[in-house]
Amino acid sequence: MRSPGSRLAEGIVTHIRRTRVDVSVARAQHAAYTSALAASGWAIEQVPAAEDCPDSVFIEDAVVVCADLAVLARPGAPARRPEVTGVAPVIGSLGLRTAAIQEPGTLDGGDVLQAGAAVYVGRGGRTNAAGIRQLRELLAPLGRTVIAVPLSKVLHLKSAVTALPDGTFLVLPQLVPAGLFPAVRPVDEEAGCHVVPLGGDRVLIAASAPRTADLLDDLGFTPVVVDISEFEKLEGCVTCLSVLLHGR
Image 1 (cartoon, rainbow, N blue to C red):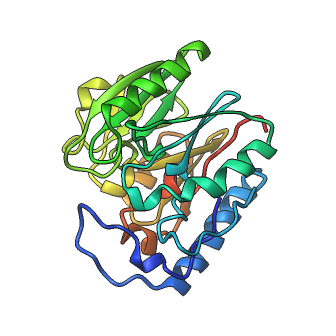
Image 2 (cartoon, rainbow, N blue to C red; image 1 turned 135 degrees about the horizontal axis):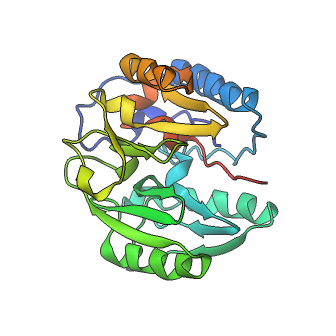
């Protein structure tokens, strides 16, 4: 994880209207998010703050971890590429093998959804074909199959679809081709398609998706609800504020 910097409000906005971000509230929300992960048994590794990078709190975009391999991203927004520099030493200290997306490839971690041996990668404004090809080559030795998903109406793939622990997918159909995913559960709240499985039946979800949280509860999951409203003003969601390293 990486704490929000003082310039958070200057973060990039692409598909929504810019509104005022309260950095002090964002920091409190980030602390509560961190506490929710810790309460679910996760040890927290902090990447040093990057004050010159307003979007650096969205650490998911900087690295993709698959098994023992960490793929350092090359963000599609040039202003975000310096964010990766601070992530690399922390990843190295955890004993992971590393690789990196190279020019002309671009890849944002928010476009990468892992579900078993399938790795879905959004092809949109931040991730290009060269980045997808490079990721496919890097993950093939790990037995993973990379499936490209065309995007046009949403910033990242995981802004439109995420996977539940039972193998089903929460999807907002108007934002992503739902037919590319097996066992789809359509939702009607945009924040409802962003979840993070925390282990067991616990699933992290934003407070802005109460109906989806109720659906998860009805399906036998335990929703862990966090308020990330300030980050949602910058097109952030629960997935992009952390990178979970299983078995570490």
